Image (tube, rainbow over all chains, first blue to last red; front, side, top):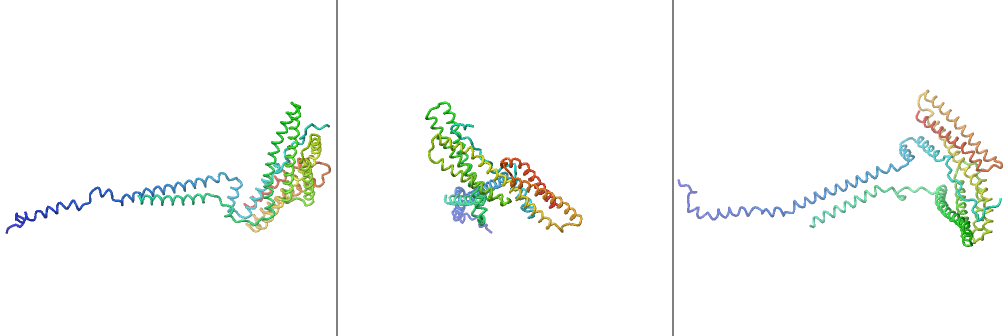
Length: 129
Length: 280
């Protein structure tokens, strides 16, 4: 039996068809330049960078807020700290602390309204005795 | 480009919103957000006292400047002995007298309000002191009227002379009020301590076993003895202020400061005892 692939006449007739298929193969693949210009990967990259920047900035703001909040108690007076500490204490303990604070304020050695430091001899000439 | 713009706009909006939230969180609560308590007379009195204290400090500062001007003018006149240096001395003296009078006027107004505000003062003593303060305010008002027109050298010299006499009475009244305020504060604290002792006693009466109750009873006994001592000393100081003869209030006050200090220490001791009782 004669092998059909060895028929040169048929081959010469079909050759252009095979050539066209072979040539059309590279055309079916998208060119390399098209792959680079595809907008999808670029957009996702912007979102990723934007997201990271956003997270970093929000984290920085929160850290700043926490630092400011934690710095505030340093300025609070000892009496206020004592009051804050006893917030959870019993009402009797609270009353006792209030009394202690009032007693500290009412120190008899510290005049609340001392007599003003005025010049009693505001005169043009000194007084004769 | 459009997508980039959208992303940047979104980030900016989110950041602005976060910033506003953080700033709002950091802000202390405003007066509007807090519950506004009803305004009582005592609160109004406290506000008036605070305002007067601010005015008083400003007036004292103004007086210091005027007094400095007076001292400079005095030295200049002693050196130069000219009519213009005398004129400057007369004007600075009158200006100094006016500001000094205003300082004292505001100071006595402050004393009047503080006396009104302070509890724990015997009503009779309070009324006497209040009357004396009003009398001093009226006297200072008279000085104010006298010093309003431009006065010449002899007239100012006369005002200065009468003031030098009146200032003793003015100062004595101030010390009368200062003594009562100090006494009133301690009397109020004594009353509060006595009330607290009674409350703690009733609320802890049945707490713990028999041993604990006995220990607490002994502790209360000691505290009450200390408070009786405080009461006696406060009454003694009050009696001295009531029965003073010709002794100036300033002398009484200076002598009484040590006694008041002792009372204050005893009250602190009583509060310390109560702290121990609460921990039993």
